[in-house]
Image (cartoon, rainbow, N blue to C red; front, side):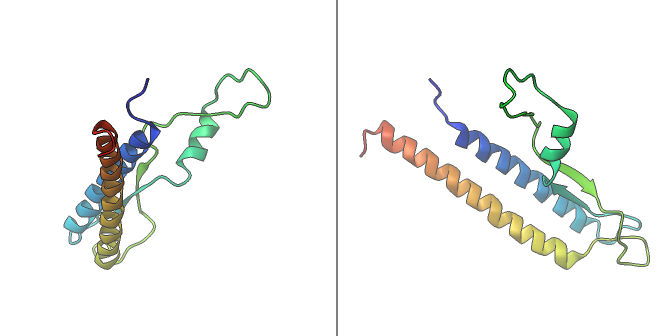
Length: 129
């Protein structure tokens, strides 16, 4: 019997992603005046499809879907394609602040969802009271 369902694992991964994204955005903002600093971002788009290309599983039936496992489902990338200032730095503070606000809303929604799951469990333990 599993005490926690898959939702807890998904929320944990989402919180991990959001924490890493917050660290990267904060680092970008801190280095806004550093010469030749290139901004970074945390992404998980296309990570699954890239991993599927490299991994395969043994399928016992031709109709079974192939699958793969990802360590965390996201990766950090460096943006080398742009330059906003004369010193080679490409950090756009307005964009980073907007990304930070968006990430904080996302993180808070995941925490609220986790609290809801724990409240539901607490209600069950108390016998519905």
